[in-house]
Amino acid sequence: MEIIIGLLIIAIGAFCQSSCYVPINKIKDWSWESYWIVQGVFAWLILPLLGALLAVPDGHSFFELFSTGSTFNIWMTVLFGVLWGVGGLTFGLSMRYLGVALGQSIALGTCAGLGTIMGPVLLNMFFPELNALESLTFAVILGVVVTLLGIAIIGVAGSMKAASLSEEEKKAAVKDFNFPKGLAIALLAGFMSGCFNVGLEFGKGINFGDLTPDMYKTLPATFLVTLGGFITNAVYCFYQNSKNGTWGDYRNGKVWANNVIFCALAGALWYSQFFGLSLGKGFLTESPTLLTLSFCILMALNVVFSNVWGIILKEWKGCSQKTIAVLVTGIIVLIISSFLPQLI
Image (tube, rainbow, N blue to C red; front, side, top):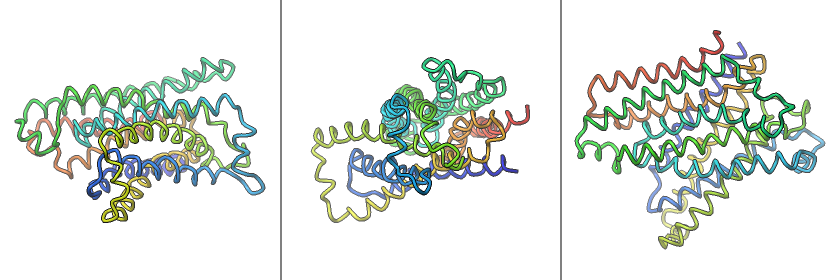
């Protein structure tokens, strides 16, 4: 029963993440770089910090987490957060050229597979005594393969969509639709986004051990990863503010309150995925396989819900029944991938 609860919590987080771009549509008269970094203040700084504080038991301070932990692991966690930040930047571009459904599907699918594999592999390189590769069991590899299969099927549906629609129909669904360009950016975004899970692997020991409840143990590492990502995004967004002369966005009093509210909502929805991942892991401790696969499961469910939003937003409007059937097949395979390893 606890495993079901854990998976449901992760699924709720995935649904919230897949919905985080809906509030962004309510933002007015701000350039991309302005609203992106403002929502990032909530998504990557404020909320992860509040989450990390939950891991601090009574009688201890937040700064003890970093003063007593491994300095090397702390800096590696932040470093992979910086690398993940590159994925976050290109992630937004992938949806610009492919739409919410297809962009998230390809980027998150690549992120799911590589993130799950890269974490134990890189951890084993630095700390072979931990035997991190032992976590990559047959069930885990099978789960990753089935996830990638589901992503590939959705990718085929996207290719069919690109081939069947006229340029006018593509633009009607996604204004800047460009499948080849979007595909390349989405694959890069997925690869770099996989660094998030690598950062979590390096930082999984940054807590107070038995004094920190299992469901909160990865929240300090999550904060360090998102902190690194914030640095990357801030550098790029502020550069774009200077290049495009958009610093005035932050002083536009007419829309400031509206935009900050929707940026905060978008940030909260985005952070929910990793808050839910941490809480969900607390219920999966009896299944080492699902613990290892939890990041992959989260990304797979993100893809499922992003495609549901894609359908709601009519990004697949005008496609043939065959294309929709392929899309639905891919979604079903992804759902199966979340539970299959537990049945082995």
